[in-house]
Length: 291
Image (cartoon, rainbow, N blue to C red; front, top):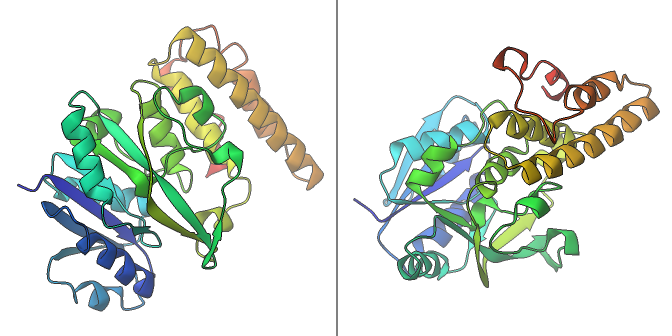
């Protein structure tokens, strides 16, 4: 049984996934299984992946990145899980550094590394709001995602306990999972940039959907309904939810669209900072705008 299972989800990124795979196979840590889940590609991805003898290739009909990641995890066997988006790369010591961290900190359940950002091949510096921090990152993570799938390593039992990636979310599925995890456990940080994030592609989810906060609103509502938050966490979550809904409603009206669905969510969670989660029969009734 390998110590680490690496999951690469991919869709029509034949050339990029070749480089991503090569960066995994170049790792200084070798006790690894690598599973590439092809989410319905029709660009010859299968032939590219099958060039690599040490890679397990799995094809599935197109169901989205969350389903691809979850499928890969279900097929894997390592005690530690790591994900690599097919447009990103790992530095050679990425896995070795994280395995060493878990060995030195046996109580730790999840850690991520720092990363370098490239846009169209040019190094860029992330804005301060994207700055990573360590430990209890829940409050900072409410506004936007502060954990990168390509930078994470976590114990299998934590992924299972958290329920994996939400396959119903078209986008912000990473924000949703890491926020659920950050609500209950510290997320540790290795302050060495061991991931190269390559942005600017036309097929990135952030370019495919308008109003990405729509999906974050769904995640926040789910979190408020989950029953896992402390009173203070509920207050913080409700505050961010109300702010995001107000901005989305205003934006909808400016575009001549109906802003009422967002206001309905605000009304449904008006006292969410102090009351118990909603009855299951009413959960999600105001969230159709995100799908």
